[in-house]
View (cartoon, rainbow, N blue to C red):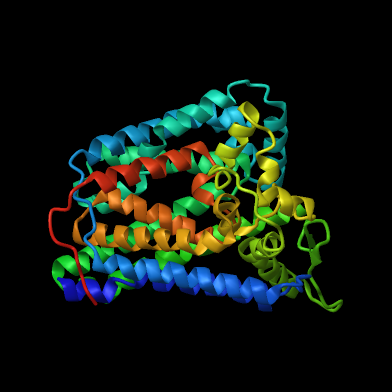
Length: 433
C-alpha cells in the first residue's frame, strides 16, 4: 500500500505548482505590461514561498497523519444539506432584496444582477443580513461537507440523501446567479474536482492499482471538460456584462491597460478578451504584492490575515488597526484593496511581516500534504475537508486569503481542522520516500 501511495503522494503538489506556475507566466509574460520597479524582488520572494510550500508538503510524508473515518458522516451531511436549502431563502433576500424564485429574471443579464446586489447591500433594507451571516457561519461546517461526503460515500447514499444533494446544489447555483458572482460556482467546482481526486486515490490504494477502465476515464474526463468549459463561459459572460462588452479595458482605473491591434476581428477580440480577463483574474494580485513589498511592516496583532476579523475589531475596538495593514498601504498607493487583489502573502504579511511569510506557507504545505495522506490512507472525511479547504487556499493564493475572508469559510475550516487534528489514526501512515 505504501508503494501505491508513493506514486500518488505528490499529485496535489504537482497540480498546484503547475497552476501557480501558469499564473506567474500570465503575470510576467502575459498581455499586460505591469509598471513595476521591483520585479526581481517580487520574483525572488515568490520563488522562496513556493519552495516553502513544496518543502512543507514533502515533510508531511515523514510523520504520522491523524484522522479516521467519521462515524456520523450522514448526520453531518443531512444537516448541512437541509441548512443550505433553508438558508437559501433568507440569504437571497438579505443579499439581493429578491427571493430565489426570481432567478429567471436575472439569467439573461448577470451584470445587472451584480449591480442590483451591490445596491441591495448598500441599502440593507431587509435589516437581517447580520443575522443571516451569523446563521450561515454557524451551519457552515456542515454545509461545506455535503458535496465531499456525497462523493466519498456515494455507494451509501439513500434516496433522501440524493434529493438533498440536488437541493443543495440548486441552492448554491441560485444564490450565485441571483448575486451575479463567481465565488460560489468556483468553490463548487473545486470541491467537486478535489473530492473526485480523493475518491480515485482511495480506489487506487484499495485495489493496489488504477481500477477504472478507459471508458470510465474518458467519460469522467469529458464531464470535467464540460464543467470547466461551462464555468469559464459563465465567467466570461458575467465579466462582459459587467464591463459592457469585450473592448479594450484597463485594470484599477488605468494602472495597466490591454493592448489590441486596430485590425482585430470580432473573434480575435473575444479571444484577446478571454486571455486578458483570465490574466487579470488569476494574476493581478502579484502587482499588489509588488507594491506591498515596498512598504514598511506595522503589525496588525494577528488579525490582519482576515478581512472578517480585522473589520470587526476595527469597528468595536480600534479603527486604526486597518491602517496598519499592508492592504491599506497598497490602497494608498493606488491599488484598491476592495476592487483589486494582492495575493494571500500580503494578508499574512500584515501579521508577521514578509520575512516570516515563507514559514507560514511551509506550515500550510505541511498540513496540506498531511491531510491528503490522511484521507487516502486513513479514510478520514475530516482530513478530506481540510485538504479541500487548503487546496482552495492554494488556488486563491495569487488573489487573497480566501479561507479567512468570511465568517462561514473561516469557521468551517477551523472546525474541521480541530476535528481532524483530534482524531487518532487507526493505522501507521509514515511513508518514507
